[in-house]
Amino acid sequence: MSAHGAPLVRAERLTMAFGTNVVQRDLDFEIRRDEVFVIAGASGCGKSTLLRHLVGLQPPAAGRVLHGGHDLYAADDAELATLRHGFGVMFQAGALWTSMSVGENVMLPLQLFTTMDEARREAEARFKLALVGLDGSFDAEPSALSGGMRKRAAIARAMALDPPLLFLDEPSAGLDPLTSARLDELILQLRDDFGTTVVMVTHELESLMAVGDRLLFLDAQTKTATALGPPHELARSGPQSVREFLARGKPA
Ligand SMILES: Nc1ncnc2c1ncn2[C@@H]1O[C@H](COP(=O)(O)OP(=O)(O)OP(=O)(O)O)[C@@H](O)[C@H]1O
Image 1: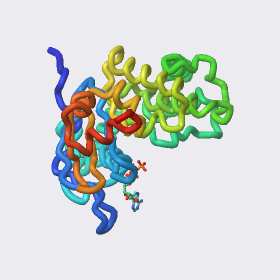
Image 2: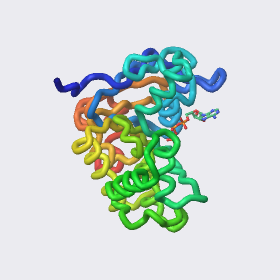
Image 3: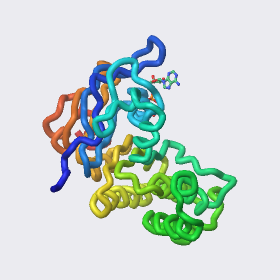
């Protein structure tokens, strides 16, 4: 039976705050299996903060985050460890350990969380690096890679354990258009060939339109989500602020 469309993650009346400063309130949405779910909105609206809430790094001020029906912040250590194996995360800086080679970076989660022997770990890491187009970079130092290559290596590491769900914070920020387009292709390949669900924060309009199945728009003024739907639909008939956001850079 196909589980397509079944919710993997659900935010229920999620309110996020730093002290008394509420960033977003009453977010209600679900992330469905096999979709590319994009989180967008003006700078400072709370996109990265939402990602941190969704991966268990910052407890909500109110409301819940559910993974597969389990409350992430009510889980005990053992449950949390299991839930965490269900997803990979690439943060904005895409930080790799600089004291290790690129291949060792990708092998690290396998070493920490599996019983694979060294040869198997290396084979897996090489496979993941090939997938992101970095076949030749296994032995390279992270510092020898370009920004785009580092991001792809960080995605390979996030995918090391074959998580069904990947969270990516600004994967194409700071990349040239060609490299950014390659990353978009990779994201679609992950969805289509590997059945990976991708949750992505992005500023990049082209990327959002190219890969997003659904877009959650966080409004910085009202401090809540004002739209959720396919980006092309929202660009045509969404709320005015969302249409304006999606029309940036296009002639009026
Ligand atoms: N550690 C923190 N302590 C206090 N306030 C914070 C902290 N991190 C973020 N904020 C505030 O929370 C709000 C949301 O920040 P966040 O980084 O999530 O926004 P964003 O939409 O991801 O921004 P950008 O698009 O610029 O990356 C901002 O007003 C920010 O100043």
